[in-house]
Length: 218
Image 1 (tube, rainbow, N blue to C red):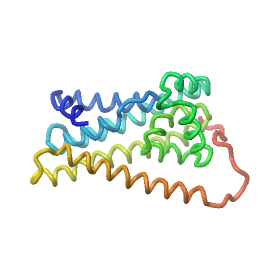
Image 2 (image 1 turned 60 degrees about the horizontal axis):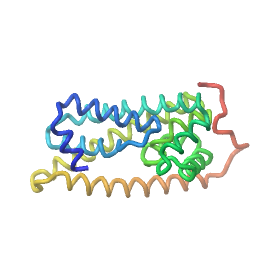
Image 3 (image 1 turned 120 degrees about the vertical axis):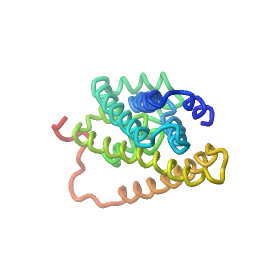
Image 4 (image 1 turned 90 degrees about the vertical axis):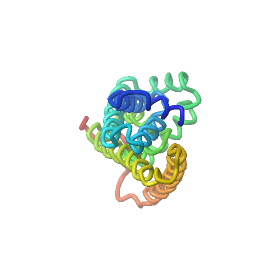
């Protein structure tokens, strides 16, 4: 992450914003790229005064929402054969085991998997293509996608920015602060998301189960 931050710091701010949007956007389409590392590194640069935090957050949110939407369209057109090809192309990230776990999340939580998936590495990559392949109605997908993308982008950016600004008075290397906070934030968010997922899974059903792709709005 330190190498990524050092590399980004040598670029003009507008290039940093474009890279943040581009890497996160391509990752959200279903291609394993280090989107979160780029976002964390850019947020640390914002804390150091190199770039503006609001533009980093906007770029990340834009890339996440647009990339997921493109991934949704590709997944809806390509279906399961596309997911199988992605699995052969990236077996470590999108192999049969990872795809099965992602499908289980969608089957259990429906559109909530799109929202919470933005905070989980595996679902962050697969949410768009998988939602399209499973024919999740696009309006429901877009609402969850946009909400999750905005919460993830602005939450991550401003958390690191705020802590980094407060810590710069007593620490010379702000990268270590970001690394520690990123780990703690990741552990905390994972615990909360798992707790929320268990709560959702324990809620009694009030009627016949609706298929994930039910509905005609797309």
